Image 1 (cartoon, rainbow, N blue to C red):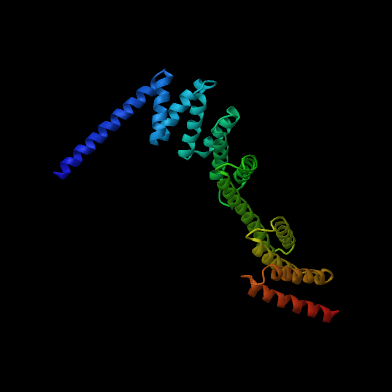
Image 2: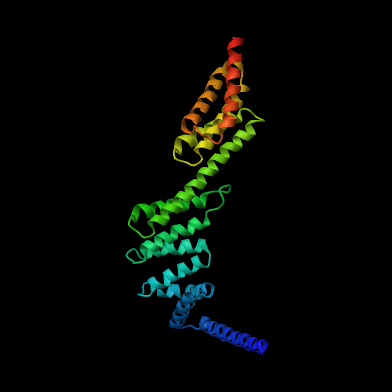
Length: 275
């Protein structure tokens, strides 16, 4: 009995889908715009964004300059976003903002434009062009709409992307440091990269890490320097240690930093004796 009822239900579902597909194909081929508009909005409301997009693609040009054009373009852009096609979503939301500067949906569309690029932001290890674009758009939104309901979310997204970029900068500097263990002149690039990061990102969550690895790079460079540069570089490395301890007295890097500091003191002592 149960299997029979299940078969009947499956058959009914198949018939509904068949009728739905048949209706969709019929409207898709129809030259009349109104049925396409009605079905596109119906599919959008039902969450069938992929099929809604095909209809919106057909009718959007025909609604340019018409009262319904604003509604069509917003649904079109939002369908792309909900279908996870963020490139085209961003493009369409940007078009909406430029086409309807007085729309009630202007704030939301501006935010969704920025959010589309936020969704495209890749892992920190990859090229950050999309991250930069998203940050730029988020900052414009934040500055333009400080009272918006999306303001807090925009700030959170901007902070997340900024942190991602900070991580990339630190990892690049650490890579210089790693390579410098086998090619000492590269350590100068590592130290410069850490210095730039520390000065430009005073509130970064990676500041402690940058300070430690700056000390690590400076110590290795100093120890392997020629005699005429050794003392100055050892003192610079010791300054790095003091800077780390001043800002992070309970640093998670305290043990290895203390060990490096002892090495620096021994090298300075040996240098003074030799002189």
